Amino acid sequence: MADSAGVKQLLHVGCGTKTIDNLPAFFQSGWRETRLDINPDVAPDIVASLTDLSAVESGGYDAVWSSHNVEHVFHHEATEVCRAFRRVLRGGGFAVITCPDLRTAMEIGAKKGLDATIYDSPIGPITPRDMLFGHQRSIARGNTYMAHRNGFDLTSLRDVLVAAGFQRTFGVRVQYDLWFIAGDFAGTDAARTQLGEILERTV
Image 1 (cartoon, rainbow, N blue to C red):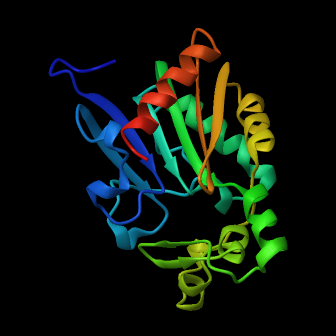
Image 2 (tube, helix red, strand yellow; image 1 turned 60 degrees about the horizontal axis):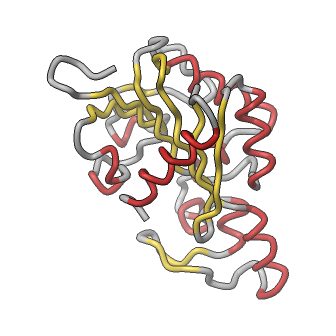
């Protein structure tokens, strides 16, 4: 629900360093971002772990944006994390989640090797090993927050979201990542349309 100025509330979990590039274009106008991260060095609005969102008010947000976070918690924790995403959403709100597609990582790793460059990112070349276990160069420099404890393909992430209580989910592979939307949509077509609009303005 937008405020009197027409601005909606976005919870950006695992926000990292504050920069407009960390938000999809869809959320860059008409949304007020609340930044949450476990790392106090990035100066988030809320310092918290994904596994403990108790500091976040229930029903306070129109959307949750989670980019490359859910792979950093253990598999048995993932459902509770997504259940917390659902708790903080207002009626009609939705969560958008993106993370590495492990099926793609495994296929490329088996064909070209775990340390083959898949693509170049702002933090350097990304390999199947990075997608599976976390960005190795960052971890070697001491940023252990980058380590992965879990991973997903389309089926397994959908199952987590359903177990978390979301009524509708829709997910796609985009290049080397999964993109999912989850919320109380009227139907799958509505979820697909909303995710399509977000992707059209982002990738």
